Length: 102
Picture 1 (cartoon, rainbow, N blue to C red):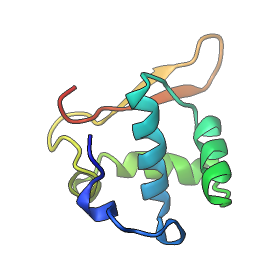
Picture 2 (cartoon, helix red, strand yellow):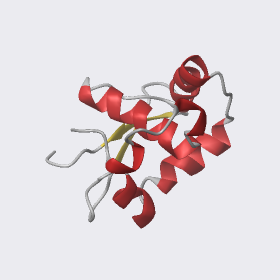
Picture 3 (cartoon, rainbow, N blue to C red):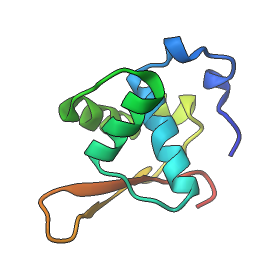
Picture 4 (cartoon, one colour):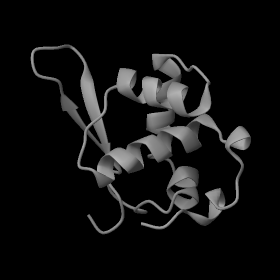
């Protein structure tokens, strides 16, 4: 998957949380990995130096399902774009982005 046009040439300092969550989930999906809120939070903090709380990351994951994010990130127009599964022996969930063609 190529970089979506909406992100081409965008400096790191101008990335939104939705951009960061998209990049994080896209890279994990390419490697067939599932991520928790905490792992998404950690990766974004390491990559950008910005810290976001779990509710904010949760809202951004929900945004991936909305039309404006589907268009901006070249995600499938219909159907689910985020897979969610319960973590073994835990109350938390893991998430994976569904890319076009999957």
